Amino acid sequence: MTRGAAIALVAVLAACSGERSSPSPAPPTTPALDPPPAAPPVDAGGKVGCERLPFADSAPIAEASGAVYVPAAGSDPASILLVGDSGARGQYGRVSAETGDVLEQGALRIDGGASDDLEGLSRIGDTFYAITSSGFMRHYRRQGGKLALVVKAYSIGSERDGTACADGRKANCGPYYEGLCLHNDAAAGDGCAGFAASKKTGRLVCLVLDGTRLRADPARTIQVSRRETLTGCDIADADLAWAGTNLIGGSVVYRVRGWQDTKSAQIEPVASIGPGFPEAIAVGPDQVVYRFSDTGGAPSLMTKHRCE
Image (cartoon, rainbow, N blue to C red; front, side, top):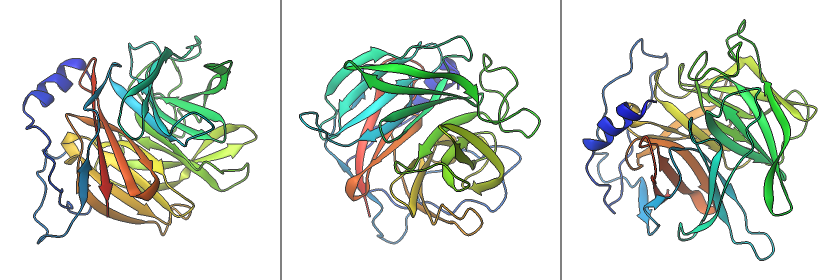
């Protein structure tokens, strides 16, 4: 999204309260031709959605567009790794999963094979994957205390089948990906290792682990929301995935049950949560959901919730 559009939308938002949010209506079975207007939370007769938890309200990086939960390891506490959007030149930050306090800041190396429009971040084992809006992927791994580029930008598909743009240096083209979610224990094979979230279609597009690289399978998708609204996803375990929409889509968070079978996966709206213009989503243990907002610059707003 553009800086001007984000700022204009954020300006009309009310501050996010600490009250529990109510579930929103289920998404339509087919994408709408045009994005719907922003929808307020729906009164579901007292049914609980998500409870906001204490957490820092912002992170000092520009346009947080990708996020992934990283479990505690040794002396390192559990954390959320965030990456910035186009123009941030690979800026990333790591914040405490407990408090939101900043633990680390830096910049990912961006090779010339694709733009710096990093829109999604996820991991398999010790490898972090970052996807651009155009459908180009890079791999990073921690080396010497820093995140090092270990696989340069490559396309996950083709312009012909609609899974990637022909030129990785372009942004917001083709499927217009805005999120990435991978199963941490995924292995090479024909099954979906996870998904890329297409804002253009509102669908999660299956990603297959082909050796060490990810490849999009356009035949396997899950319709989550209307066009122009899907902005992020995360995978909690072998059965449960999560997805989030932007303000245009009502800032709704969905559960996606049975995601490994894209034909029978069940979509369940949970609640309307997230500050500003919600973009990235990350999920920790016990259904704790983190949402991060692209406000067109720094800082990036963030909230933490426990969902039922």
